[in-house]
Length: 613
Image (cartoon, rainbow, N blue to C red; front, side):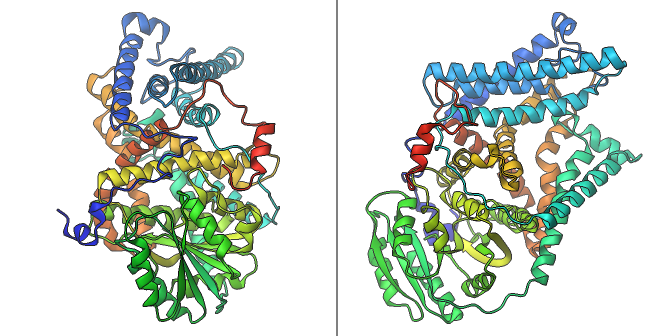
């Protein structure tokens, strides 16, 4: 048994709440649902690979995939067979009626094949008129990216999702951000092309080791180079910024549900931060229907505080958003801090975070959560937060593109969430929803890589599964609720680029485990002798770019000790992908598809109720 986890009680947690599966939008699923889905996918993919690569199949599909026109060259993987197989298996075991699942499967497969047919028709036209054809690996990459996007948006259409709201967008002067983005994208593209065209054996080897659609080292380099430049600009902005001491009275909202084991430590950490802050700090413990001794433990801890004052407010209605909204109603200060009950803030966190609010354009401030250490997933989690929060989120700050700041520790101006109607209830991702909308009001979101706090990491498989299913569903819930940003005419970077990217990335992550299996099938059985997959290709899909970014994030954040956890992190990414698949399987699907571009009367009526999902 892990002694550290046992000592702090994390290994005893069997967490579940109304947020684990919001009843309108998701259901609790068996641990066997995902393995069964993967098994059916494997059988379907194997059958299709055998049929397409048979003597008869090759007459219709000489490119060894569901390709309907001649292309130049070869591909690394039969991406269309992979996607059709995944669509079928996922829809078959998604949450919903049999009619709904059949409709979902039909919609996915037919829509994808029609798009592929149109791509191939365009290739035939080019070939006929100009005598040139697309390269097959280009077609495969395009088919793969389209397939990821199609899956995400069809799930938004078919899934029971939070209703669309009107997201208020206040245009900002974006000249600097636009120029920065243009220069960085151009530089990244040139760098990627230059590397991929190098006449070196290493480049040829890397190209032969890729998996999805023949993606080479140049494509793999594009995003890391892009975010690396954004990160450097963001750090430059931090160095140039002139923050000053700013110490207004603040409130700290702590939603608590069965947190007896840690709530006293949480309050003590806030008290120590209040002493460093040197101004009035009022703690609001929102006891959200706890069944253990959370209330009594919190009361004793509050009485022991020397710098902060506080009180306990009972919130009988279950749900974290309910507790947060009750706390928001009770706040009497201009600024407030949201802190999760399992989070221990640093001694300088309040002092450091509040300095940014001396700038009236700053609307929300967060930092980087670090794991306490000593439990099963803590080593991998350290690299995960350094990559996600310490690198990507910091980088997006350079172009004011931060979408969500985690609610474990976040500081806001009280007027903003009140103006926006509070924290949305009944869905996952209430913190991302609110921070995104504050950003769209024209205020800057700041993620300070030096603002570190300790946040609990689940110590057991069951607890980690529950947490990640909530987190990964939230991408779809927030995107559905705020899809006004995607489809409106407002030129919002978050709506036109970042939210769609998050959706496509969620689809890619949900397909990672099936992709590894599919690549292994092609590698072991050598279905395509024209372009055989080597075992390095299967390994590269989980270790290539992720390793490079993880190492860079650890070094740039000044945490070289995290490098020993790279193997843990790479394995955890596969587990995280598996949880993403489970999370999306838990979403209820309907028998009909909703028109995402239209705000229906029902949507507008529901969005008028400020605290209803």
